Length: 414
Ligand code: FES
Ligand SMILES: [Fe+2]
Image (cartoon, rainbow, N blue to C red; front, top):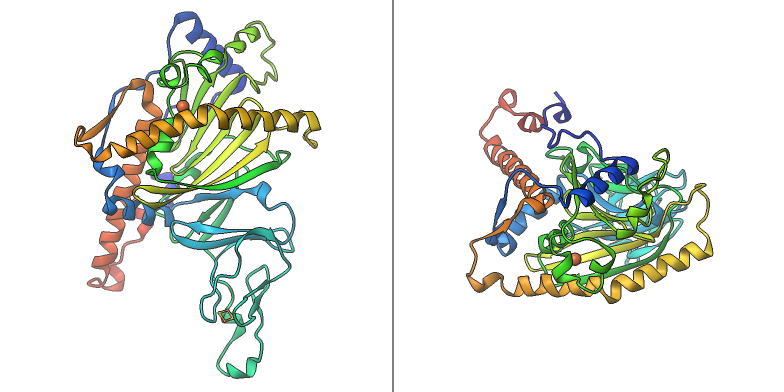
């Protein structure tokens, strides 16, 4: 039986609320001075933020789940590629000449040189070391002085693809090795649309465990004390809508101006510019719908205390699905500048201060309250998948002692 039929769903809600449903739910909270509450608190061992063993397990899991690699918008034309590490493995994702998006291990089949670096557009991947050249569909096309390799079969020496590539929600998901389950793709919320364009991208390294950064985006309990002059004047104190879909979650932070929509027709209602929506795409990626743009951030954990972030800024969807206007682009850039100069710095200070105190011995666990249920959801699913990985790896170790007929299909372990 495929694993998708064996998984428990994590929520009674099959999908995130529509904007109209969200508006009514937010207005209820405003009128009653309430917020969304999870069922219980969550306790996460502090060790999980510092242990090499835990980090290694998270990285192995990352290779065996569908993990967002880049926005589809980063591959706008045939030959567009993005190369970077994912779970420590160099990967190149490329749109081939027929338009299919493919993902390969970024290593030449001669002596392993990486073939692509960063992003760009190319007709062929030519290795800079000895000149072997690969077509965009991975086939080994050309070997200089081929007579030196009398046993070489070019058909067997193309670029090595990852296990699978999925295109969903405007993101390219790669699964490097046989998956331990559907992960984020169990049920993915609506994310990016085709008309959104990337207007900025960057790469940043932070001396932070990736989970601290993720947690900092998944609750509004901190908005008033941490962001008293940046975000709080536009928003509310501890008023959020928290939704789960599969192992993913979405936290809504309404702006005060949303109250102007109280009597707006609900049909085709859009909350663009009225809310911030933080989507956590299980477990390492965030897709944030902000006031005037979208921010997408792909975390690449490099050690228990170090994370590389690949960040993209995209325009909002347009009403007619066409090109964004100059004015919309200018507003998007202004939005990015505001965040970079204010709230982002305030959040960065908090997480680096927590990171510095991890070894203080003050806490054996961090405590997440009922306002912080999206964080509990992330940890709960991470624990579930790590347990599944451990079980699977344990069985692989025992495999050597089994006969063929005794071997277990990994899917049935889910
Ligand atoms: S390593 Fe690529 S051609 Fe030699
Ligand atoms: Fe914050």
